[in-house]
Length: 263
Length: 347
Image (cartoon, rainbow over all chains, first blue to last red; front, side, top):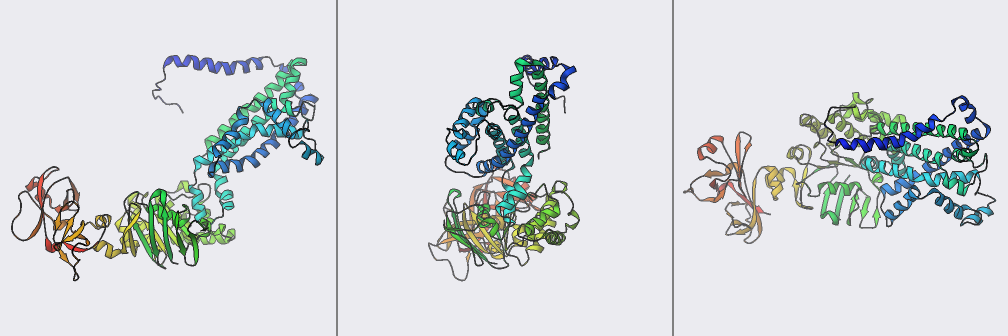
């Protein structure tokens, strides 16, 4: 909706704003201009591309599920309770957002790797996590969990507790209140958080290559495949990149959709 | 269903003790910030008091910092200023929420919901969404929802404060009907609510109960400034000196005592109607009267009359008198009230 309201923005501001917008759009356009449309379909459906794409979708979906399972309780505890050290905990939860992913990968390696903190325990169970598909999921969950927690905690705070209080005075147990009142009310926020987490998991590179390696069909996700193809087959790299751009655009559309329908 | 409560909430400076007898409706009156809503929150289990004890029948709601009963186990329904209908449920499912949460089947809880919606004349709203209701309709549904949970004690926190003034009388009728014979506590600003809905009145000021008793007694013989205010009376508080009441500001008010006069030196209040106060520009002479020199602070319409506010006493006079005496804020006047119009009793 545009209206004729006076904006009050100085005219010169439009110049850096336009430069900024170009800075984002231009590289994408440049990349799109290099796509070999004739061979596009065969490039993105080659054996290795397909395997990478399927692996990416599978691991990202699993990671998103894990984010929901772990992140919803975390957001609830952060938004609805208060305890000593909560502020510190909230900062720590946000850490993967700002940490270089490669550092996250190293940290994971020293936790779940063969010689890591939990390595022996995991060995006893007969499992081998590092350099497996499980490692990919762990790396993706590690980097994308904060997106869900932050998004949902904000929604929970905005929604407030008034409806929950009413529900409890009507005789509903805490679990009933959570299931029938809290979650339905924050569903748009939860969906937005899940979509963001999925997008972050799909684009994950640094932690994955450090902690999970790059085994074709096992840990080589789409971003890793693009990075590898970049030298041997630039056309394939560009084509696959475009696929990720399309996914990203869809994600933004989805998030905006759920946000605008919220409340 | 009787409630016995003593509670201290330190960080809101609230300290109260009150009882609600079986089937009794108690109105809690008081200025903003006097702690009325805090008391309801303590009873409902939303605020945990620092000390005190509460029992509802034979259930202990809380006892000191030890035992504690969660809100959903208390059987205390809470109706707030805002209806707070769950926006994602239909009106029917909102009302069915209570029974459904306490174990009734879906079919049974919807049957109950229909019954309660009919009870508050909102049966035809069952299939609507909360966003499609007017404020008055939503509050009716909220009442039905609170009642459908079959609370042992109903807590109402200014249930009509957010409503359009035109629907308040109808809502008051609904409340009068559903509160009949039900144990309830209603927090209100409006003296009409106390008169029409409550058997018993509690007046709170600054976190303390300053006055309580049967509604008609409190309104006829208020002992607190707020109580006198809602009853529309002047109240002077002080100690008895030569049969009159000497206030902290030095005013001496003569009046009539009950059969048992309040002893010399005890705390007492002198209460009189603004209509009994006459206003003069010159000091009046003649019959024994209470006469005070003061300054007019405000003039405001009061029914067919004009209420003259001064620092301590207000007077109701007719518009011609205002014109004749040329009264306006700042005018120096003498207020007079016959001792026979003043009632003196223990504070």
